[in-house]
Amino acid sequence: MAKKDLDWGNLGFNYMPCDYSYVCNYKDGAWEEGGLTDDHTLTLSEDAGIFHYCQEIFEGLKAYTTEDGSIVCFRPDLNAQRMYDSAERLVMPPFPIDKFVDAVKQVVAANADWVPPFGSGATLYIRPFMVATGNVIGVKPADEYQFRIFVTPVGPYFKGGDTSVKLAIAKYDRAAPHGTGNIKAGLNYAMSLLAVTEAHNAGYAENMYLDSQSRTYVEETGGANIIFVDKQGNLVVPQSATDSILPSITRRSLVVVARDILGMNVIERPVKFEEVLAGDFVECGLCGTAAVISPVEKVEGDGVDVTFPDCVGTSGPVMKKLRETLTAIQTCAAEDPFGWVCKIS
Image 1 (spheres, rainbow, N blue to C red):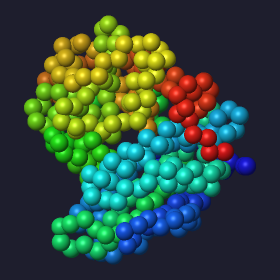
Image 2 (tube, rainbow, N blue to C red; image 1 turned 180 degrees about the vertical axis):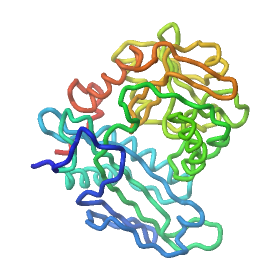
Image 3 (cartoon, helix red, strand yellow; image 1 turned 90 degrees about the vertical axis):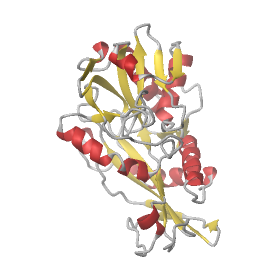
Image 4 (spheres, one colour; image 1 turned 45 degrees about the horizontal axis):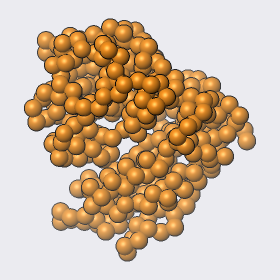
């Protein structure tokens, strides 16, 4: 196997078409067998349900080259389950979990030359998604769908790697109570585009969203979950009483790493924004597939100016240890005691 001739150490987080994608269609009440394709385009009717009623869901995971040259990915079964749950919420036909994992293995193996080499700092990003392709003019679910996976080599999500970022307090709401905030649907991200554009224009990396019902509790950012470390060294993980926070696979894995490997005390609970204002937390991080953990130095906006003292400039000691431990498991540089790593080749 010969890797592609790319400047692996300087990749951005951008789309680069690779050799193969995976495609599978749903029609007449059943999923077809599906398989690889070298066609990276979709041709749809102007009346396809995706264009009118936003039946679209997606996932994101990564493949890595290990030190011994193997290719692995991380917990694809959880991505499969989350996509299954997302489909049910939007009245789409769930893609079978075992079929999802097999499709990931197929498309990564077929694009093995595009998986960045070990130590490059880059990864192969894997994007499964499903859209309504059937014609639908009345407000109702479509009757035909397409599931696809494309892959693309990427560098760090936030430029600067382990450099701390600043967040703005969002003046918009991300998700309604008992709405769709806990599923990975494109419609949620469309709602965040104005907010993140305004944040970027003002010099911020992202927004911190508060709950839309009371604007009292911390929820997440437009593209990542939020975690904190308090003054006592506890890992504090915000939860929502109204199912409006996405169940990040990275966040759930970090909780296990913190508790079962690093021996930390982990507290999962609703977090009041007034705790942030009071300076109760010494570290803050954004966690997700793309960023793993990105340290947060400051939160600002409308009279708010909070600094997390242990994350000035770069990750604090807890975030750094969490990131190092999780990425070591993901790349097989450390023992995987949980069976999370899925070997591709």
